[in-house]
Image (cartoon, rainbow, N blue to C red; front, side, top):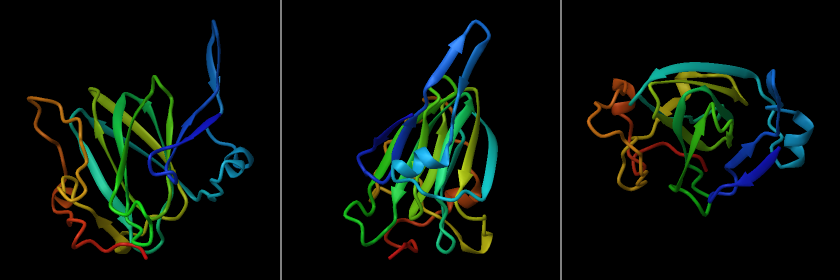
Length: 182
């Protein structure tokens, strides 16, 4: 596997080695020892799987307690995946990283604890699977406003399509009002 730190170095783009022949392909998506050798020593406790229609935006979610690291990949379709640094002590606080993840490119994104996470669906349909380093705790879940100008995410919104977003996500708080990490 190839591990490439993003412009926020704690967020890592992971590209698997693909072994293919006339039957199809094989790839390893996670191996604890290899990930630890590249600075990702998370112990995963939960796997999640979501399916979404084109122009769906999910996020930006985080948990103020029990923060989750997420290892994100797409098994059908294509998304624009985003992580926002919410660690006040970090030199990259309030900055974001965005990567295209797809079933075709087979890339994964490591989003460490302390970040808000979300994605926008570019294909007709997308299925996203991710490993989480802590359990979902709805009482601690928070939502950062997806279009906060102070963060300035450059979402590749599809022209002519209505944004599909939940009321909870639409009501996210701007960075200046959001609960963040130390």
